Amino acid sequence: MRQLNTNAKPNVNRKRATALWKKPAFRPLAFASLMGVVAALMTYAVKTGLADLATLRVETAAIDATAGSGFILKDVLVEGRENTPAKDLRAVVNLSLDQPILNIDPNKLRTRIEALPWVATASVERQLPDIIHIKLNEHRPTAMWQHDGTFSLINKEGEVILTGGDDIKVFSHLPLVVGKGAPAHADKVLAILRSEPDLGKKVKAAVRVSERRWDIAMENGMFIRLPEDHPEKAWSRLAIYNKEHELFKKKLESVDMRLPDRILVKTEGLETIRKPLVGQDT
Image (cartoon, rainbow, N blue to C red; front, side):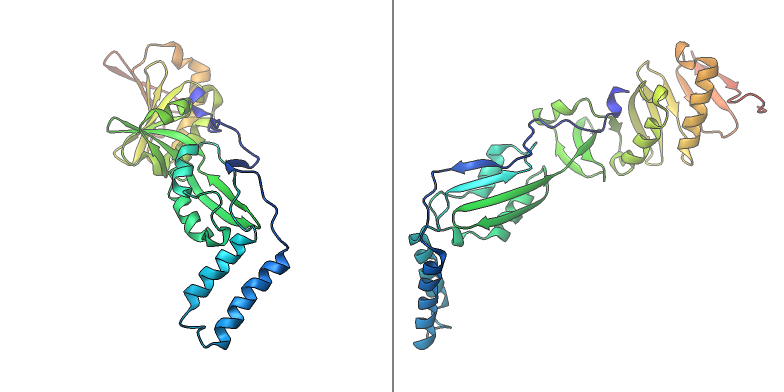
């Protein structure tokens, strides 16, 4: 089943950190000298009784002092970016080279980055004297969801990653689930479909019915109607019956598996009761 490959291939493989901005680094003065400047400023504030009143000024002066000693941004490195567009990341990072690196708040920057659609979590750290290092943990798409004429990418937890647009077309190889409420139950039904590979490779989409159960649309146009309870058992019964009777070589509209002791086969408007296994009564 081509749709059941849930290992989405990323657009670009960037396992190593890459640079968003880059400028030849200027080697700073010794760190001890820099800290001496900061300490002197703080000592002066305390001795003159301005520690509380002039905190902001002292902090600003300290940051200016560090910048003057070479603690300015020269590079932004990004690790783990696969599907997040670089232009979108640059826009939310919004840093300028040569700005004081100690004036950059890693927590605020992380919050902005985690608001991007592809980003599940992120970490941001200052690597003194001149580097900001960003590590992304992106969502992993496992299926495509169709609802009200719109396509969305969803992850294993059923969360929507991205909706519409050309960006999701490259993920058309993913399994397709359809209908209201489908994402929350997609991971379970996809596991059921994969459990019988010979059937699974013939699946076109899994359709959520009344937010209770699934109809499975097959590549040949046939629908498999699974029960609300224990759909995995029905899918296994179908696999056995198909091996014995080669259902998919027949022109059938649907195969109804909702009754535990029989299979209802519909062809050209007629329904016929079939035994699912040899020895079972109908």
